[in-house]
Image (cartoon, rainbow, N blue to C red; front, side, top):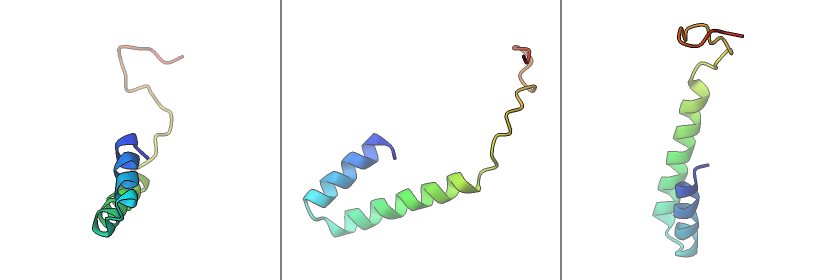
Length: 54
């Protein structure tokens, strides 16, 4: 979780701002779901022509 999001969540929890907590939670879970749906990198770096593969 990014530091800026952690700080905002902590601030929202300390001030008991329910709407901010819910909003940040939704943002975080949407981000996680988007990251999970991305295709994973298989380690093939042969597309980079400037640096030969080892």
